[in-house]
Length: 153
Image (cartoon, rainbow, N blue to C red; front, side, top):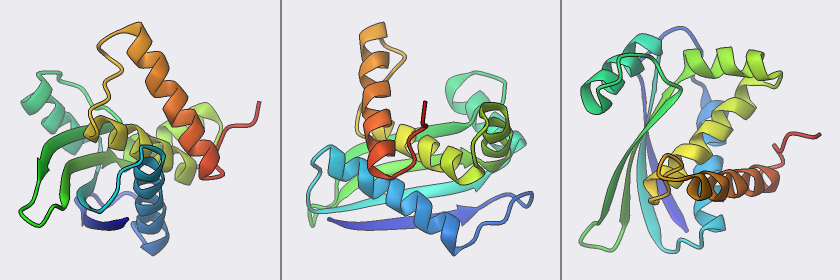
């Protein structure tokens, strides 16, 4: 699988370094491998803060509050067959807060939200039914385990 990730940093509260970009890339790749996606794919990832993601959430979902991650799937292929997956917008401010709340690291939370968002880009939606939510949770857990980032009980 050939994956191209376009990164944009639209926030200043948290450092975006090569390690974070590689982690996000690895999370996307692990999700695509788990789902059996072959060939070339492209995804855009924007790192933002709570104010930035709240503005997008309000504009596109009519929900006027910050969220942790938004997914904007394209569901189309380029002329050369590259799968244009879409856009992931990740609030690093929420990542930090949730990592603290759930008692695990910032990197683990960013990876989890990336896996979650990539599944949305592939068409999964946990908000459609309880069965879909359980299915998506199972996938997320197995992918995080493959990344070596599963939560130990």
